[in-house]
Amino acid sequence: MRIAVFNTKSYDRRFLTEANAAFGHDLHFLEPRLEPATASLAAGHQAVCVFVNDVVDAEVLEVLAGQGTRLVALRCAGFNNVDLAAAHRLGIAVVRVPAYSPHAVAEFTIGLLLAVDRHIPRAWARVRDNNFALDGLIGRNLHGRTVGVIGTGKIGALVARGLRLGFGCEVLAADLYPDPELERIGVRYVPRDELLRTAEIITLHCPLTPDTRHLIDTATIDAARDGLMIVNTSRGALIDTAALIEGLKSRKIGAVALDVYEQEADLFFEDLSNEIVSDDLFQRLLTFPNVLVTGHQAFLTEEALAAIAETTLRSAADAEAGKMLQNRVDADRIATSK
Ligand code: NAD
Image (cartoon, rainbow, N blue to C red; front, top):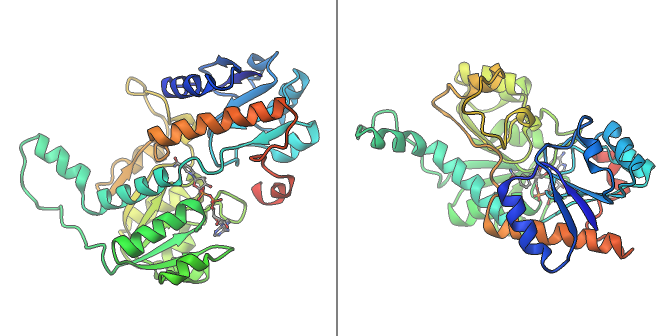
């Protein structure tokens, strides 16, 4: 299949090319992200392959459909950037990679949590400057603390399990579908409001939907415990960034670790070190000593990239052969994904 791979980085090229030895697709790597201005680059390609910040809205899909594209292959799990209703209407199938490596994201989440809580990046910066003073680096034991996990799907379940069994935390959870395996190890499902009010640390692992957009906002921050720590490796818009900054300024929020950010599409995955970044909210976030931000890299392991490439190219092969698409984003998700 002739596939236009948008938003290509060196690692995408490497892992897709390696995996393609088994499939023989005609891969056309493109650096720009997919958006209305670049959709014409997909002309003549039956499939486009895109990532989290590509724009796959109705306008883009209309152009793609008009040019003969029949498949949108997301090389990620989330699909909040795709207008599924428009794709359905235009006869474009949408596939994703539902579970390339939940371990990659879960492990990174716990790493971020520990790093911000125990001030590891600040300590490293000091040591590199031959400053071995410990003032300001006091952390807290994770053992015995109450952590709230919102969304206990593939990633959230691993985080909950690690925190419960590995660190001895009290783990509260909120999900539409409680996981009996987690309940068996002592994870306690509670209503989301109760979790938001009682947890000392909240880690977000639910998808971005109308119900979860800005689930951390001024009201939830006001109602939370003093010194709340928030970890987000899911999707940026789960958090109202302006409210988060106010919570940090008032010291209501004790620490924040983010791998995702509401307006990340304008920043992440690019080297902007020689540019002036005009996103004032993002720049303000970076000024807090108790905030740690990474640029959407929780997924970035060898294992995950290999699995993403393999699953994506297999879906394209199945589409070409007219087989059932196992990783199709179902029409019945349309109602919950917008
Ligand atoms: P998943 O579908 O396995 O789990 C999501 C869980 O959230 C499900 O159990 C679902 O029932 C639950 N949920 C849905 N709506 C909810 C709500 N309103 N309140 C509480 N729970 C709700 O997904 P996953 O593979 O565990 O991924 C979780 C999220 O992580 C994805 O949506 C994606 O946005 C994000 N992600 C980030 C990275 C990264 O690199 N930072 C990588 C992969 C995935």
